[in-house]
Image (cartoon, rainbow, N blue to C red; front, side):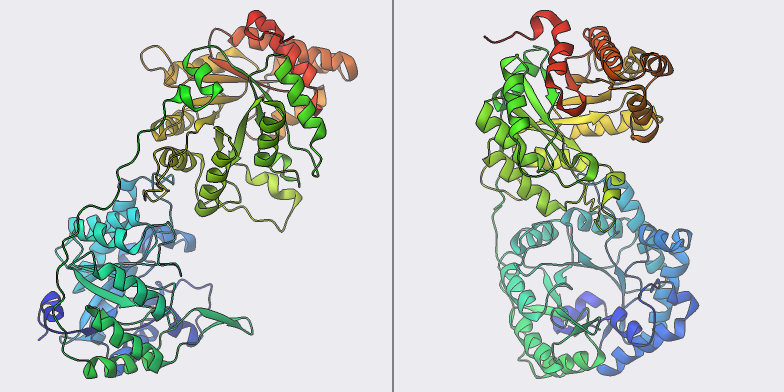
Length: 620
């Protein structure tokens, strides 16, 4: 009869199994198949994999439930079968393990981005973990293994879920890159201390890198925690051979590193991707031959994480920030990056706008999905060559979290202090069918990243040693079809740290008034609102915006006015008149404006702004 799992770890090293997916694929399972569902439809196949590892000497086998959570199963239309699949996985493993071996309930990441970087709340994420872990516990597992965790924030929710639904010991394993940090930037020292504080029984690493990378990180972890350690590396980094991923670490090589893990105090050792029963057999031999495990001294570590820095006051971050705080009604004009590299026309236009008293040039990101100069480059050129302040519209589209942070740190170094954080539209990539739309985060997550950088932290909350000073803006759509959802997202953006908001183009005040009433706090919006003012060029232009541009809504009476004006100079004059009327109507409702004009007609933007009278003072 097996003794309690943690008691066994106190006495000696326990050998875990290897890769479930690697072995299932080797048996002919399709790469597109939901592996977790095999617990129900082909349990004998899963049993064969478990049995192979048991025969090789594994003392603990992990259930085939890495992705058996509601979020991942939804991709296969199996979201309502979480309990069935997880319960079956636990029972299949228990049948092979019997009464002598241990069964670990495998719990992988959700495949979702949790707050503060994503739209899924911590409470929702924890509930998803609870559902899976409850079924595993019901199925009779001896321990819960949280594995391949990328985000420390998510690992915390998984650990909390395990504590909420069962009393089983928990092994918490992060995954790292070749530099030893998690993909979200947490160092081995940092995540080891956090998991220790949060009460994980065993702390370790699995997946992503081979034995050498895991050894380096384990050595760093061992210095900052007295918890038991685990190591389950990949069989090296995969190489592509004839279109298939092949792991090249030999069993003897893995065994050599197993001995090194043990010398650092690792109590649970096994393998991950690419690891076969042959690797586990070699690791088992190494464990038997290893010297008796010496006691590892508990290291008392004082809090090493620096406190977040206090953000710079908004009025000191930029001239725009000061105008917003001082309620001076700033006026921005959109300057679209050129196709190609020559920005002469745009820079001359920005200089003209500065001389006409415009407060800032708002530079859109990836306009039209075509190959244009980057918004960041044009914004920097405008500030350097014209002294007109720029607002960089920065999109999440096509950028992962690491790239976003690199771009924003670079923007700060270039002197760009104003950022308009937008999610970005997938539809704009249609001009390039081969292009991909990476969306690690949406605009809410982007605002959180900006807020972290302003406090001297990276997206994972790790200190950077210096802080940025961004004035952060966001988009809002008063004419959204689902106004409740729009208000909810706006409130999240403000909570995340937004300093101002720019509306989608406004063509009537009724919708804007409804939106403003919904968001008011104490009779005023929580942050300054800048009204988007768009100058229509023609009836065809108005029709296109109303029917084909996401988030745009042109009322029927405006369409009719543009239809009567038709095209040419008459249409442009009518579009200018509509924009002027709209700006005057919203003047008392908002705290600023952003004017967009077609085809770089900057003089038209100045004409629109002139209806404000003294708000835009010409500079001689």
